[in-house]
Amino acid sequence: MPQNDKGRKTYRYGDLLNASGAGRRTLDIHAVLPEPERDEQGRIVRLPQPPVSLTSSEVSRILKPYFSVRFREQLRAVVPLAAYLALFQIIVLRQLVEDPWLVTGGLLAVIVGLMFFMEGLKLGLMPFGEVIGATLPRKAALPVVLLITLLLGIGVTFAEPAIGALKTAGQNVSADKAPYLYLVLNQMADTLVLVVGASVGLAAVIGTLRFLYGWSLKPLVYTALVPVLGLSLYAASQPQLASAIGLAWDTGAVTTGPVTVPLVLSLGIGIATAAGKGDSGLSGFGIVTLASLFPIGGVLLLLITLSFTTSPAEISQLAASVSTTENLTPPWYARSPGVEILMGIRAILPLVIFLFLVLRWMLKEPLKNRREVFLGIFLTIVGMCIFNIGLTYGLSKLGGSAGGMMPMAFMAIPGQEDSPLYTYAVGLALALVFTWVLGFGATIAEPALNALGITAETLTNGVFRKRTLILSVSVGVAFGIALGLAKLIFNLPLLWLILPCYLVAVILTWLSSEAFVNVAWDSAGVTTGPITVPLVLALGLGFGSAVDAVEGFGILSMASVGPIITVMISGLWSRYCARAQARAAQKKEPSAVSTLEEIT
Image (cartoon, rainbow, N blue to C red; front, side, top):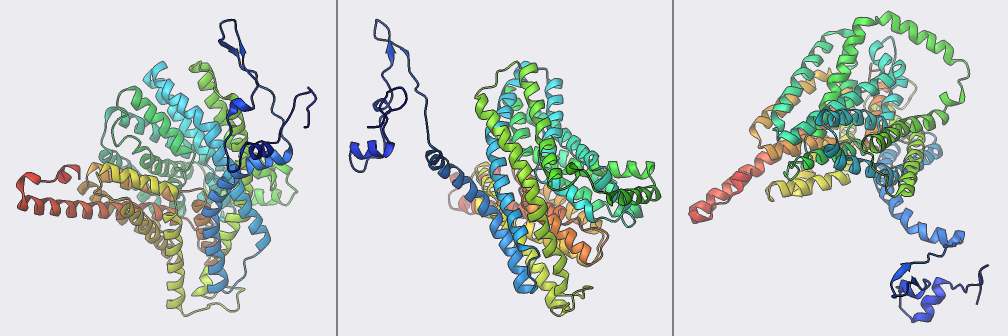
């Protein structure tokens, strides 16, 4: 029998199980722990905790199932989309994927990075949000609570994985064709994210007040849309600003990701619960909707302000001077992978410091499970850095490549001798069907959509079934993405598509009940995952670059408004069916009138 350095006998766990009898998989802990120390009355005074010593192979066997489950979860999200893009490129476009091993390594980095990031978010950042959400409303006045909510909205926006895709998107924008778009995506990228973050923070404040006072979402949507559409109309009337409208509307789709939604919601619901208003079935809805609309107005205001202070000629001069300095070898932190690592640390660390200061200095609450929380923060930062590297070499490269080659299907592309591969009608149909299936497939597999479906079914007492909602959102996103691609193909002004779609959404909002309005407008947020956003952005920018379009934005914004319309149409149809059933039941037995009409 082996002995350790203290002379105690040690047993292998497998040997112990074998000795205990065939088939046993559990073991009483008292059989392996030393006897507790007791006082004179026989009461336990201390439980000795001998140090655990594990070999590297034992650590590996313990961690393997833990990480394999999380790895497979991200694998299922990334591989089908990447395989679909690659197969479309190989089979339909007859082109091999450029730098296949580099792209594969990048996609692997995305999977590993998201695995670490999501686990770190759960262990490290979410405990902060839950404690602050439950404690802050009891210890601070409402204005202070709302100020913290505003600052938290800014912090979580910087920490969103998909926000890095916006910065990457600026690399292909021409300062001569789209000066203000170039300026905000390149020279003022941090200011752009700050404005988006402040808008998300303001949305979180108003959403929290809505929880507190039970405001209807309908007037908030109308109030938010009026200035946003008005600013869009003004920007569309200015030739130098029109090219940046797509960016403004796409930022609304980027902000509601895996960091913003749970952290801001936990604080908002915590405030409402502390005030005794957290038991409503609609608690939790609304912030995602407002966080999608407010950044559009914020970015448009930033662009309009810049148009009054900086001329296109000055931006062109600035771009020329930057181009000259870019010929010099940049320092390590401005080159890949240093820049991706630095972006990852800068995104997470300020948010952690802010949350820690609120917890310790304002709430004076101890940090429970400190080791676990610190491990979670470490995993979040490491995951964000690895994800950023994967974003550059995997998702953006693959999406950009597929988008850049897609026009070959129906038009001649300089440098591609075989283009066009098909007749115009067939190639155009193939491109639109490809994007439709991409949008449908990416959405229907989204885990957050399943959770929203269950909530919607509960809210409407089964009138609006989960399957109906999932199909409605997926079809809406699919048509939205296909419409966004059509905008790039036919060089349509984005406002021509946005304005009618949102007018239809407003009319449907007026006709729908409060429950359906909450579900429909929040459903747009599920289209903005950390994988879908970079892929769709890169696809649009690659396509726009191939057809020599000024910019390639707008697809995400159309993917957001699509499900709003389809979900409310489905909701109205469900209400019509429920009322028809109620009338039929009333004719048969007047006392058995269904309460569905009240629900819907």
